Length: 183
Length: 290
Image (tube, rainbow over all chains, first blue to last red):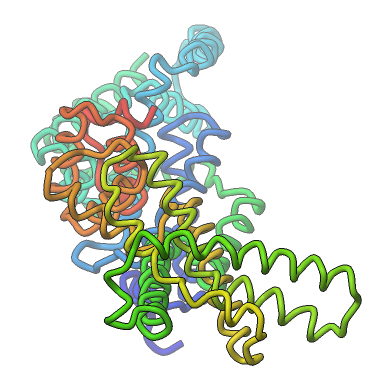
């Protein structure tokens, strides 16, 4: 393997019938897409379903793919549209109670600790809970940045929001995460 | 996490690695999709490439169906022109319309007789097929069309179907004398092609006519600008929708909704979502998908 093919080249190759190209593409993005969906939806069954749906739609639309935009943007745009549809149907989300339950479990032992020195485990746990607690749009913007490594413009393109809106969502998300660590 | 400057924090998040939060995030469990999902996705991708080709199938069935219909119609027209419609015979209509009824009975009788008297396989196969496809097929082709036309459009255009139905005058003669094997094969193929076309038309398009008949009916409907309540015009519209740019397509769907054609709008939007999964469905149209 001298030179690695880009995602866009692989996608075009798959559209032309090269199945190996798809397998390579899939292996590259399966993990990040899955984690993005799982942390955004906060429900494994939903994440599984939308993960498969996202790839199905990509497969179905393969011949329409044009490498104008990055492949990642295209893939995440498909995922984003499915997430929005899901949220629209599910509002209010069922996981609120679960989140509350986990919070109460977390808060009790924390109040017993005078030194408040958070262990690494605790820090990870708090971050996870903070993510779950974020409003959908803030969480999605945050995950697109941190899990998928996207910049403001790309996040804006995927979510259909303006650049400044994305910036503001990220700022709010950071503030909420920080607040979770401060308790 | 103390003494926070939100802007600096944001810069850190947007910088390489995502700052402290990024470090912490990367220490969270790295969930992976389960194997069964891998299998499902890769299987679907393989099926799409090797056999199924779902996105193309929909478009091609429409195309192939239309082409088959046109070929069939052209074949019928050519046959009619050659075998039956000599210029001198063309004007006579009323008397001829009765004549083709006889060969059907004869053919049916002949078929019964053949079934009653055991013959060789070749004979048994060729005789009914030749009767059914060789001479009577033009009428069979058109007869169901006439029925459908009458069902769906009542008496919208009574003049057109008889024009197609008239020609089979010379039917009796070949029915008595079995045509050559090659002809029978071609006729069977044609009949099979029509069956396939009709099946695919009914399944995918909702079209129950040959391309020619459909085209005949389509043109006046389009000219009148009347939205036909039957499915065929809808499937043709869907085909046309697919040619539109995403923005125009969505505008067209809105237009359909305004015209009260919710079913058509829904179908068009579903097709849109499949064709453009990366384009978000506007909020005002999304209820159509629920």
